[in-house]
Image (cartoon, rainbow, N blue to C red; front, side, top):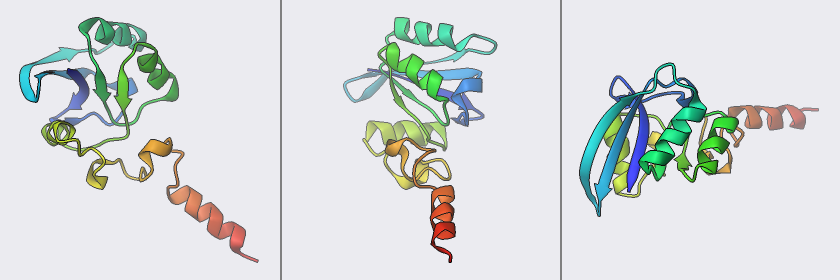
Length: 135
């Protein structure tokens, strides 16, 4: 299995659409077999998606990502795990332990990551409900 993650200063990059570096980790069973970093600065994301598919990337773990880019990676057969934040090494350890659901890795306002965050029930949805209830 191969995993890619946009990185910035040792952390997962906050926005995939503007990422400049990728960490690519290959796992053999449950052990790390290979690790490389690759520059994607100035590259078109369409080319990045094709390149990751050619490398055999199974999963892209990232922070915020636009819907068109998410669809582009999915069309290449790459599973995307979005809306995460934190140190890259901790994210990778959580991925290996199947614990990415931990609330501490979710970007602020993304409590409902699998319901399509940031459109999930974040602060804005709650605030809107409170306003509607007022007489």
